[in-house]
Amino acid sequence: VVAMLSHVNGGGFAEYAVAKESLTVARPPEVSAADGAGLPVAGLTALQALTQPAGVKLDGTGPEKNLLITAASGGVGHYAVQLAKLAKTHVSATCG
Image 1: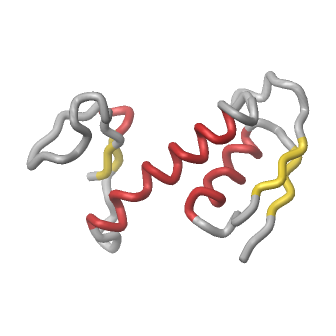
Image 2: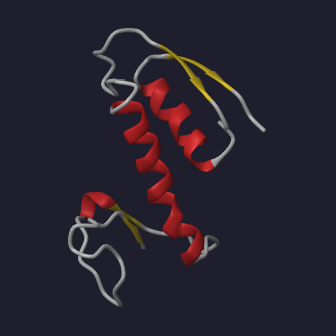
């Protein structure tokens, strides 16, 4: 299982944790626990970068924007491209 936990109550530094079902997904067996642990971090970082400093509205109600996403082939960049397209923005991306 991979889950996004709140850092307010100590995060995931525990043997057991309680998480909201909406923030929990099954980890595929071919993904190690260590690799799976990084998935929510990359997605949340992309989400925060787009919605806070860039002001992108993911429901598509905001003004049209042109975004340049650097390192789009990385973990955060990959999520950022997908989320930005949900917001109906024009995305230019760099890789490498």
